[in-house]
Length: 371
Image 1 (cartoon, helix red, strand yellow):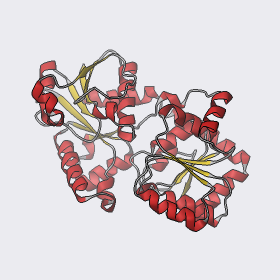
Image 2: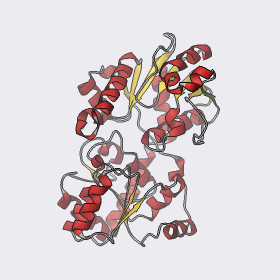
Image 3: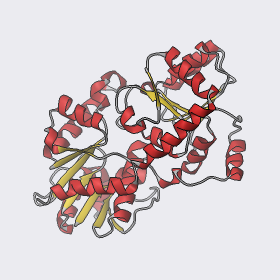
Image 4: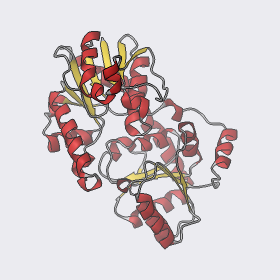
Protein backbone atom coordinates (compact mmCIF):
# COMPACT_ATOMS: atom_id res chain seq x y z
CA UNK A 1 0.00 0.00 0.00
CA UNK A 2 0.94 3.62 -0.48
CA UNK A 3 0.28 5.54 2.74
CA UNK A 4 0.68 9.28 3.22
CA UNK A 5 0.97 11.11 6.55
CA UNK A 6 0.41 14.74 7.44
CA UNK A 7 3.92 15.07 8.89
CA UNK A 8 4.16 18.81 9.58
CA UNK A 9 4.21 18.31 13.33
CA UNK A 10 6.64 15.42 13.05
CA UNK A 11 9.14 17.93 11.67
CA UNK A 12 8.18 21.09 13.56
CA UNK A 13 6.50 20.28 16.87
CA UNK A 14 8.42 19.31 20.00
CA UNK A 15 5.40 18.55 22.18
CA UNK A 16 2.72 15.86 22.26
CA UNK A 17 1.45 16.07 18.68
CA UNK A 18 4.99 16.03 17.36
CA UNK A 19 6.00 13.09 19.51
CA UNK A 20 2.91 11.15 18.43
CA UNK A 21 3.57 11.87 14.75
CA UNK A 22 7.23 10.93 14.95
CA UNK A 23 6.55 7.72 16.87
CA UNK A 24 3.71 6.64 14.57
CA UNK A 25 5.89 7.18 11.51
CA UNK A 26 8.85 5.43 13.13
CA UNK A 27 6.79 2.46 14.28
CA UNK A 28 5.01 1.86 10.97
CA UNK A 29 8.01 2.40 8.72
CA UNK A 30 10.13 -0.01 10.78
CA UNK A 31 7.53 -2.58 11.88
CA UNK A 32 5.59 -2.69 8.58
CA UNK A 33 8.24 -1.85 5.96
CA UNK A 34 6.41 -3.50 3.06
CA UNK A 35 4.26 -0.39 2.56
CA UNK A 36 5.41 2.77 0.79
CA UNK A 37 5.24 5.79 3.10
CA UNK A 38 5.06 9.47 2.15
CA UNK A 39 5.60 12.30 4.65
CA UNK A 40 3.72 15.47 3.69
CA UNK A 41 5.16 18.67 5.16
CA UNK A 42 4.72 22.31 4.05
CA UNK A 43 8.47 22.86 4.48
CA UNK A 44 11.59 20.99 5.50
CA UNK A 45 14.11 23.73 6.23
CA UNK A 46 14.61 24.13 9.96
CA UNK A 47 12.73 20.95 10.78
CA UNK A 48 14.04 18.37 13.18
CA UNK A 49 15.38 15.00 12.06
CA UNK A 50 13.81 11.78 13.32
CA UNK A 51 13.79 8.08 12.56
CA UNK A 52 11.42 7.52 9.67
CA UNK A 53 12.53 4.25 8.07
CA UNK A 54 12.07 3.98 4.32
CA UNK A 55 9.88 6.96 3.45
CA UNK A 56 9.60 9.80 0.95
CA UNK A 57 9.22 13.44 1.96
CA UNK A 58 6.62 15.36 -0.05
CA UNK A 59 6.82 19.17 0.14
CA UNK A 60 5.58 22.08 -2.00
CA UNK A 61 7.41 22.24 -5.32
CA UNK A 62 6.00 25.24 -7.20
CA UNK A 63 6.77 28.87 -6.38
CA UNK A 64 3.13 29.49 -5.43
CA UNK A 65 2.84 26.49 -3.11
CA UNK A 66 6.18 27.29 -1.47
CA UNK A 67 5.08 30.89 -0.93
CA UNK A 68 1.70 29.86 0.51
CA UNK A 69 2.81 26.68 2.27
CA UNK A 70 -0.03 26.74 4.80
CA UNK A 71 -2.53 26.78 1.95
CA UNK A 72 -0.67 23.85 0.36
CA UNK A 73 -1.08 21.84 3.57
CA UNK A 74 -4.78 22.75 3.81
CA UNK A 75 -5.74 21.94 0.23
CA UNK A 76 -2.90 22.07 -2.30
CA UNK A 77 -1.28 18.83 -1.17
CA UNK A 78 -4.36 16.94 -2.39
CA UNK A 79 -3.06 17.18 -5.96
CA UNK A 80 0.16 15.49 -4.81
CA UNK A 81 -1.88 12.77 -3.12
CA UNK A 82 -3.64 12.16 -6.44
CA UNK A 83 -0.38 12.30 -8.42
CA UNK A 84 1.22 9.69 -6.18
CA UNK A 85 -1.84 7.44 -6.25
CA UNK A 86 -1.99 7.00 -2.47
CA UNK A 87 -4.21 4.27 -1.08
CA UNK A 88 -4.51 5.95 2.33
CA UNK A 89 -3.92 9.46 3.69
CA UNK A 90 -3.63 9.70 7.48
CA UNK A 91 -3.96 13.02 9.28
CA UNK A 92 -1.91 12.45 12.41
CA UNK A 93 -2.89 15.63 14.24
CA UNK A 94 -6.66 16.16 14.29
CA UNK A 95 -7.23 17.32 10.71
CA UNK A 96 -7.43 16.34 7.06
CA UNK A 97 -6.82 18.54 4.01
CA UNK A 98 -9.62 19.55 1.66
CA UNK A 99 -10.06 18.04 -1.79
CA UNK A 100 -8.48 14.64 -1.28
CA UNK A 101 -9.18 12.20 -4.16
CA UNK A 102 -12.24 10.04 -3.61
CA UNK A 103 -10.28 6.89 -4.35
CA UNK A 104 -7.84 7.64 -1.48
CA UNK A 105 -9.12 6.32 1.85
CA UNK A 106 -8.75 8.69 4.80
CA UNK A 107 -7.91 8.32 8.48
CA UNK A 108 -7.67 11.07 11.08
CA UNK A 109 -6.24 10.74 14.58
CA UNK A 110 -8.09 12.77 17.22
CA UNK A 111 -6.03 13.31 20.35
CA UNK A 112 -8.48 15.01 22.68
CA UNK A 113 -11.46 17.35 22.84
CA UNK A 114 -10.27 19.43 25.77
CA UNK A 115 -11.32 22.62 24.00
CA UNK A 116 -14.93 21.37 24.27
CA UNK A 117 -14.69 19.91 27.78
CA UNK A 118 -12.80 22.86 29.25
CA UNK A 119 -13.49 25.77 26.88
CA UNK A 120 -12.40 28.30 29.50
CA UNK A 121 -8.79 27.20 28.90
CA UNK A 122 -8.82 28.33 25.25
CA UNK A 123 -9.32 31.67 23.48
CA UNK A 124 -12.49 31.97 21.42
CA UNK A 125 -10.68 31.92 18.07
CA UNK A 126 -8.80 28.70 19.00
CA UNK A 127 -12.06 27.02 20.06
CA UNK A 128 -13.73 28.06 16.81
CA UNK A 129 -10.81 26.89 14.67
CA UNK A 130 -10.37 23.58 16.47
CA UNK A 131 -14.06 22.77 16.30
CA UNK A 132 -14.24 23.54 12.59
CA UNK A 133 -11.15 21.45 11.77
CA UNK A 134 -11.81 18.52 14.10
CA UNK A 135 -15.52 18.08 13.43
CA UNK A 136 -15.17 18.44 9.68
CA UNK A 137 -12.27 15.94 9.62
CA UNK A 138 -14.28 13.39 11.62
CA UNK A 139 -17.19 13.79 9.20
CA UNK A 140 -15.16 13.22 6.03
CA UNK A 141 -12.73 10.57 7.34
CA UNK A 142 -13.37 6.92 6.53
CA UNK A 143 -11.94 5.92 9.93
CA UNK A 144 -11.23 7.95 13.07
CA UNK A 145 -8.41 6.90 15.40
CA UNK A 146 -8.79 7.89 19.06
CA UNK A 147 -5.69 7.64 21.25
CA UNK A 148 -7.71 6.38 24.24
CA UNK A 149 -11.13 5.02 25.15
CA UNK A 150 -11.72 8.36 26.90
CA UNK A 151 -11.20 10.24 23.64
CA UNK A 152 -13.47 7.81 21.80
CA UNK A 153 -16.20 8.39 24.38
CA UNK A 154 -15.84 12.15 23.94
CA UNK A 155 -16.00 11.85 20.16
CA UNK A 156 -19.27 9.96 20.40
CA UNK A 157 -20.83 12.16 23.10
CA UNK A 158 -19.55 15.61 22.16
CA UNK A 159 -19.18 15.46 18.37
CA UNK A 160 -21.72 12.72 17.53
CA UNK A 161 -19.21 10.55 15.68
CA UNK A 162 -20.53 7.06 14.93
CA UNK A 163 -18.79 4.82 17.47
CA UNK A 164 -18.46 2.10 14.82
CA UNK A 165 -16.26 4.46 12.84
CA UNK A 166 -13.80 5.02 15.72
CA UNK A 167 -10.84 2.76 16.51
CA UNK A 168 -8.76 3.13 19.67
CA UNK A 169 -5.03 2.88 19.01
CA UNK A 170 -2.89 3.79 21.99
CA UNK A 171 0.32 5.77 21.87
CA UNK A 172 3.76 4.43 22.54
CA UNK A 173 6.80 6.40 23.51
CA UNK A 174 10.18 6.96 21.95
CA UNK A 175 12.68 4.11 22.39
CA UNK A 176 15.03 6.63 23.97
CA UNK A 177 13.09 6.15 27.22
CA UNK A 178 13.77 2.41 27.37
CA UNK A 179 17.51 2.73 26.85
CA UNK A 180 19.73 2.03 29.85
CA UNK A 181 21.52 5.01 31.39
CA UNK A 182 24.85 4.55 33.15
CA UNK A 183 25.72 6.22 36.45
CA UNK A 184 28.26 8.53 34.82
CA UNK A 185 25.59 9.96 32.52
CA UNK A 186 23.15 10.36 35.41
CA UNK A 187 25.71 12.25 37.44
CA UNK A 188 26.60 14.47 34.48
CA UNK A 189 22.94 15.44 34.01
CA UNK A 190 22.50 15.95 37.75
CA UNK A 191 25.45 18.34 37.78
CA UNK A 192 24.32 20.11 34.59
CA UNK A 193 21.02 21.12 36.13
CA UNK A 194 22.27 21.39 39.75
CA UNK A 195 19.77 18.80 40.93
CA UNK A 196 19.51 17.42 44.48
CA UNK A 197 20.05 13.75 45.28
CA UNK A 198 16.29 13.14 45.59
CA UNK A 199 13.41 15.01 43.99
CA UNK A 200 9.87 14.76 42.63
CA UNK A 201 9.40 15.42 38.93
CA UNK A 202 6.68 16.70 36.62
CA UNK A 203 7.24 16.92 32.85
CA UNK A 204 4.67 18.79 30.73
CA UNK A 205 3.83 22.25 29.47
CA UNK A 206 3.39 24.63 32.38
CA UNK A 207 -0.27 25.46 31.82
CA UNK A 208 -3.42 25.57 33.93
CA UNK A 209 -4.97 22.18 33.20
CA UNK A 210 -1.74 20.38 34.12
CA UNK A 211 -2.52 21.38 37.71
CA UNK A 212 0.97 22.07 39.04
CA UNK A 213 -0.52 24.07 41.89
CA UNK A 214 -1.92 20.91 43.48
CA UNK A 215 1.64 19.65 44.01
CA UNK A 216 2.63 22.93 45.65
CA UNK A 217 -0.41 22.80 47.91
CA UNK A 218 0.36 19.16 48.79
CA UNK A 219 3.95 20.08 49.65
CA UNK A 220 2.69 22.85 51.91
CA UNK A 221 -0.01 20.79 53.63
CA UNK A 222 2.24 17.80 54.27
CA UNK A 223 5.39 19.79 54.96
CA UNK A 224 7.09 17.67 52.31
CA UNK A 225 10.80 18.47 52.19
CA UNK A 226 11.76 16.70 48.97
CA UNK A 227 12.19 19.27 46.18
CA UNK A 228 10.03 19.43 43.06
CA UNK A 229 11.60 19.72 39.60
CA UNK A 230 9.26 21.21 36.98
CA UNK A 231 10.24 20.55 33.36
CA UNK A 232 8.30 22.20 30.58
CA UNK A 233 7.53 25.18 28.42
CA UNK A 234 6.37 28.14 30.55
CA UNK A 235 3.24 30.21 30.06
CA UNK A 236 1.47 32.96 32.01
CA UNK A 237 0.39 30.21 34.43
CA UNK A 238 3.95 30.12 35.77
CA UNK A 239 3.33 33.54 37.33
CA UNK A 240 0.47 32.03 39.37
CA UNK A 241 2.76 29.23 40.48
CA UNK A 242 5.46 31.69 41.54
CA UNK A 243 2.93 33.47 43.74
CA UNK A 244 1.99 30.17 45.41
CA UNK A 245 5.65 29.28 45.85
CA UNK A 246 6.26 32.56 47.65
CA UNK A 247 3.07 32.21 49.69
CA UNK A 248 4.06 28.75 50.92
CA UNK A 249 7.76 29.54 51.33
CA UNK A 250 8.82 26.93 48.77
CA UNK A 251 11.40 29.07 46.94
CA UNK A 252 14.24 26.68 47.82
CA UNK A 253 12.23 23.54 47.05
CA UNK A 254 10.97 24.17 43.50
CA UNK A 255 13.29 24.07 40.48
CA UNK A 256 12.10 25.09 37.00
CA UNK A 257 13.86 23.71 33.91
CA UNK A 258 12.92 25.01 30.46
CA UNK A 259 14.08 23.90 27.00
CA UNK A 260 15.47 20.60 28.22
CA UNK A 261 16.75 18.61 25.21
CA UNK A 262 15.02 15.33 24.44
CA UNK A 263 18.10 13.26 25.21
CA UNK A 264 18.16 14.53 28.80
CA UNK A 265 14.52 13.68 29.59
CA UNK A 266 15.01 9.91 30.14
CA UNK A 267 17.88 10.68 32.50
CA UNK A 268 15.76 13.14 34.49
CA UNK A 269 12.99 10.54 34.80
CA UNK A 270 15.50 7.96 36.06
CA UNK A 271 17.05 10.40 38.51
CA UNK A 272 13.65 11.28 39.98
CA UNK A 273 12.45 9.57 43.13
CA UNK A 274 8.83 10.03 42.13
CA UNK A 275 6.88 11.31 39.13
CA UNK A 276 3.79 13.37 39.97
CA UNK A 277 1.25 14.21 37.27
CA UNK A 278 -2.06 15.57 38.68
CA UNK A 279 -3.45 16.85 35.37
CA UNK A 280 -7.20 17.43 35.20
CA UNK A 281 -7.63 16.01 31.71
CA UNK A 282 -5.54 14.51 28.89
CA UNK A 283 -6.06 12.55 25.71
CA UNK A 284 -3.58 9.88 26.77
CA UNK A 285 -1.00 11.16 29.26
CA UNK A 286 2.25 10.18 27.56
CA UNK A 287 4.49 11.39 30.46
CA UNK A 288 2.94 8.63 32.60
CA UNK A 289 4.15 6.01 30.14
CA UNK A 290 7.55 7.68 29.81
CA UNK A 291 8.03 7.64 33.59
CA UNK A 292 7.00 3.99 33.93
CA UNK A 293 9.32 3.06 31.06
CA UNK A 294 12.12 4.78 32.97
CA UNK A 295 11.25 2.77 36.11
CA UNK A 296 9.99 5.70 38.17
CA UNK A 297 6.93 5.39 40.46
CA UNK A 298 3.96 7.45 39.24
CA UNK A 299 1.21 9.38 40.99
CA UNK A 300 -1.49 10.72 38.68
CA UNK A 301 -5.17 11.64 38.66
CA UNK A 302 -8.33 9.59 38.84
CA UNK A 303 -10.72 9.83 35.90
CA UNK A 304 -10.06 10.95 32.32
CA UNK A 305 -7.72 8.56 30.46
CA UNK A 306 -5.13 8.15 33.20
CA UNK A 307 -6.08 4.66 34.35
CA UNK A 308 -5.89 3.45 30.73
CA UNK A 309 -2.28 4.60 30.62
CA UNK A 310 -1.16 3.83 34.16
CA UNK A 311 -3.15 0.64 34.71
CA UNK A 312 -2.51 -1.01 38.09
CA UNK A 313 1.01 0.43 38.24
CA UNK A 314 0.23 4.04 39.16
CA UNK A 315 -1.18 5.59 42.32
CA UNK A 316 -4.32 7.66 41.66
CA UNK A 317 -5.54 10.75 43.53
CA UNK A 318 -8.33 13.29 43.19
CA UNK A 319 -6.95 16.14 41.06
CA UNK A 320 -8.77 18.64 43.31
CA UNK A 321 -7.62 17.22 46.66
CA UNK A 322 -4.21 18.40 47.87
CA UNK A 323 -4.44 16.39 51.09
CA UNK A 324 -5.05 13.24 49.05
CA UNK A 325 -1.95 13.96 46.95
CA UNK A 326 0.14 14.84 50.00
CA UNK A 327 -0.71 11.53 51.67
CA UNK A 328 0.13 9.58 48.52
CA UNK A 329 3.50 11.30 48.16
CA UNK A 330 4.36 10.65 51.80
CA UNK A 331 3.29 7.00 51.55
CA UNK A 332 5.49 6.25 48.55
CA UNK A 333 8.49 8.24 49.80
CA UNK A 334 8.50 6.39 53.13
CA UNK A 335 7.76 2.88 51.85
CA UNK A 336 10.60 1.61 49.68
CA UNK A 337 8.89 -1.74 49.16
CA UNK A 338 5.78 -0.02 47.79
CA UNK A 339 7.90 2.12 45.49
CA UNK A 340 9.68 -0.96 44.15
CA UNK A 341 6.38 -2.77 43.57
CA UNK A 342 5.17 0.25 41.58
CA UNK A 343 8.33 0.16 39.47
CA UNK A 344 7.89 -3.55 38.70
CA UNK A 345 4.20 -3.07 37.89
CA UNK A 346 5.18 -0.13 35.69
CA UNK A 347 7.50 -2.35 33.68
CA UNK A 348 4.62 -4.71 32.94
CA UNK A 349 2.21 -1.89 32.13
CA UNK A 350 4.65 -0.13 29.80
CA UNK A 351 5.17 -3.37 27.86
CA UNK A 352 1.51 -3.20 26.77
CA UNK A 353 2.37 -0.20 24.60
CA UNK A 354 5.09 -1.89 22.56
CA UNK A 355 5.90 -0.89 19.00
CA UNK A 356 4.66 -4.25 17.74
CA UNK A 357 1.25 -3.93 19.41
CA UNK A 358 0.76 -0.39 18.16
CA UNK A 359 1.81 -1.34 14.63
CA UNK A 360 -0.69 -4.21 14.60
CA UNK A 361 -3.50 -2.03 15.91
CA UNK A 362 -2.87 0.65 13.29
CA UNK A 363 -2.53 -1.80 10.40
CA UNK A 364 -5.81 -3.36 11.52
CA UNK A 365 -7.40 0.06 11.07
CA UNK A 366 -5.91 0.37 7.59
CA UNK A 367 -7.11 -3.14 6.70
CA UNK A 368 -10.70 -2.09 7.35
CA UNK A 369 -10.37 0.46 4.56
CA UNK A 370 -9.64 -2.21 1.99
CA UNK A 371 -12.74 -4.33 2.63
